[in-house]
Image 1: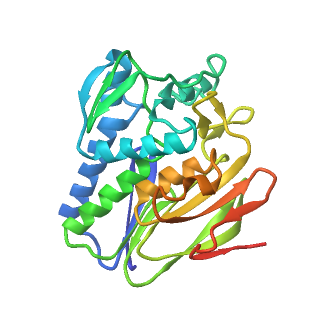
Image 2: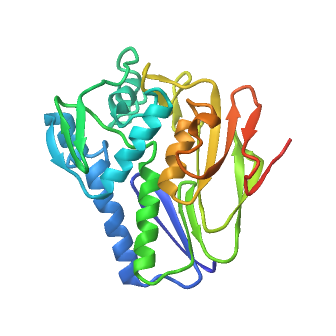
Image 3: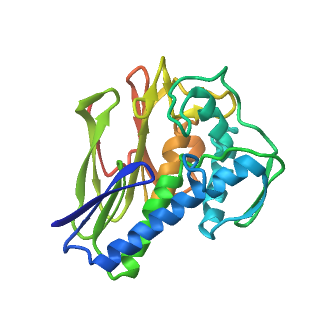
Length: 284
């Protein structure tokens, strides 16, 4: 990879590495994809579809990509006994991770609501106003959509990196360090990424207050405590992103069969579990 373009989208720093500089028309198409996604799913802007659902409830026809995203949420919700759900938006709001970035709780933790959202394909119906948040897998899906736009423009080799959630296509593997939770100067392992996606999450990212962070158990409305960081390698970034979130709430064996993947799961006490087929290593 010899050319690099960086930009901001959906509140995250993006980088795309390619063998040749991207044409202006390709960059415009990439930016259009990220803007279109944000105007549907962002809970930080007042003109998004998510904002309308939060205000009015009712029935909304979402883009076609919503069907597979919400299908994945259904599977992960079942595998985590309800801990992972797109209905977690209000939980995060109450903890202070809201559109105004107050970063101060406004009240006691609230579990996510149940039985308020029905769906047929990409059309959702909320029986009452409800705040969605698809951060558990949505950024990964947008990485996939951006990569799809690159391919449609004839770009066959690339590394798309959205704040650490990445997708690689090309003949030469990329070495990626796995940052130790709470210590940006140390890595606890590395992955050789080739023709695959790598997504991860950690409780020290988007953290505030006394033990508050963005990985929230929808059943209780409380941030998770047992697992400190996770990474997943899979063919698609949406799947890797969603499974990386689910690993905060489920034993790895419970997630086998969702999709082919390998993983690293680091617990708060420092011990780690990882798949034997991981394309890399975890240091002792």
